[in-house]
Length: 122
Image (cartoon, rainbow, N blue to C red; front, top):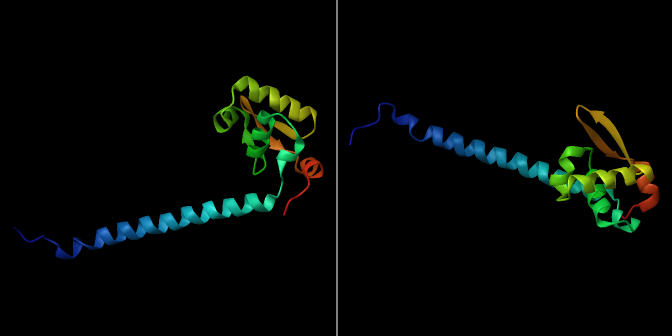
């Protein structure tokens, strides 16, 4: 077997690839843990609202941050028609607001109204 032209190049790149992968994993896990903590700190229990399950699913998605309306059917596993109807009802109740973004809407929760109706459970 022939000796490599650059023997120092055989282990070095592998070490740095593994080190980079571990660093990326640490960042991903840190972001995941931060997201879990922030959702716990949000402290809003939408199940208290005594609403149909479709509206509860949508509110649970919106509590963290605004979501584009066209993404909600996939995230909640509901049909487009069900999502549209539920958002319309939630908007009429003052629990969400919609902002036009291109061909769809950014749907955000009205946090103060939701906190008044649900309370906090910390």
